[in-house]
Image 1: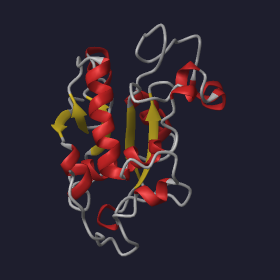
Image 2: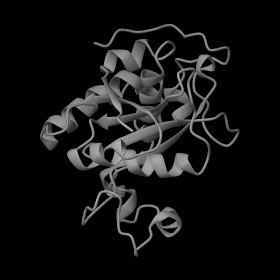
Image 3: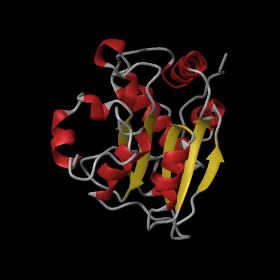
Length: 206
C-alpha cells in the first residue's frame, strides 16, 4: 500500500519526542546506535539506521508512555556480516536480498523484518510507523509500496546527499541527542524521558 513520508529535524528528535511518534523513534534510534557507532565495527557515521514501532514487548525498548509501543532497530550494514545470527535467520539465498543490492539490505528493510516477527504497532488510524535516517531510495520506496500495511515513514535526511554531508549531519544529530558522548549506555542518551513520560530539563542545541 502507498506510504506517507514525513521529514523531521534534529530539533524534533531533541525536543518533540514526547508528542510525535516519528521523533520518538528517531531519538531512540539515535541513542541505540550511539553505543556502536564505530568505524571498526562498520557501523560508522555513514551507515544508515532505522527503527520500527511494535506492540509493547518486555524484551525491547519502550517508547515514551504516550505511544504504548516498543521499538526494534535496523542498520544498513547488518547484512554484511555484523550480525551472523540475523543473517542466518532472515536471509533466504533462494530469493535474494529485499533491495536486490549486491552488498546489503537497507536499514528500513532490516528493521521491518525484525518487527514483522513481533507485531507492528498500529495507531488509532490503523497505520504503522517507521523511522529511517535517509529517505527511502527508489528501490526501497517501491518495496514499501508493496507492503500490505499502511506506513508512515519518518526521516531526517534526503536520499542522494553525499557521504560527507551525511556524516556531518549525523555528527550534529549524535551531539544533540547524546551530548557527543559516544560509547555510553543508551539509557543515558535517553535520559530526556523519565519513567512517567515527562521530559527532563531540556538544553540548547548549540
